[in-house]
Amino acid sequence: MAKAEKSWQKNGKSSSNGHVQAVSDSKAEIVFSTNNDSGFSLDAGIEVWGDTLDNWVTTRPVWNQHSYHITNVGELGEIPVNEAPNWSTPEDKPYNSYRRNSQGSADFCAPDLVPFDLEASYRDCPKTELCVWVANQGCLGVGPGVKVTFYEESLGVIGAGVTKAAIVAGAAEQVCVTPDVDLDQASVWAVVDDDGMMMGALNECAEENNLTAPIPVCLIPK
Ligand SMILES: [Ca+2]
Ligand SMILES: [Ca+2]
Image 1: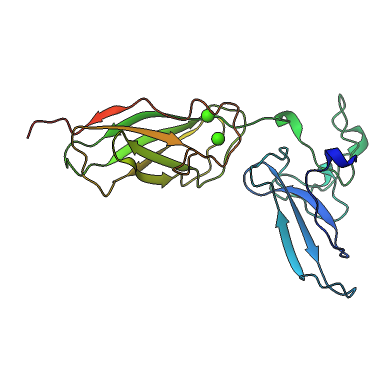
Image 2: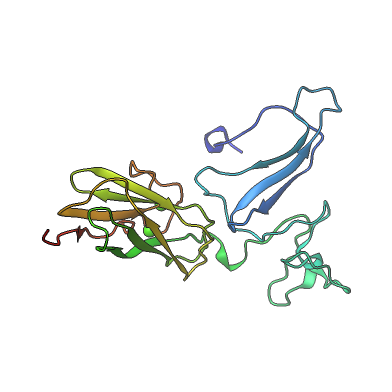
């Protein structure tokens, strides 16, 4: 690798074996064991490394052994009684890939989160619950914990919530919060994958569609 191409490295040595796996989000991480038997001052144990922006490629969510190959384990960890030859399976495009995982049809695929149906409960104005749906219209799922931030025109950030479950491609989840501020004659909108400073944690197919249009809140005459 040329120096200009190097974007990441870790110094040090270990007698470990590195593998690429997915951890619940369909994206690759590196899971490996380390020891300090060789005298280097390294931590001993299991380490998991991943890209903070989740830019690494998609991959199968399993890696069961040092001599891993795709045809010797199913995605739920099941081991076939008679293993199909890795070098000739599938017939039209054999894996032929010992100790290497598959990125499958989701190669270079990404999620695309979009908020929709933002609504407010008028019953308890000026304290009101705000709810918005988060849909994934991309081709790759996301894990739980995606931040959704709610803004008011004059107050700025008024509340934030997170998704509770993974959202696979084509699925959606509703996120609700009750801001700890009075909303009266307010104008509110929601932004998905937003930490409150318009910064996201997920790389998506489209980032410009992450916010709703403003809605009026608590306009009921007193
Ligand atoms: Ca998006
Ligand atoms: Ca994003």
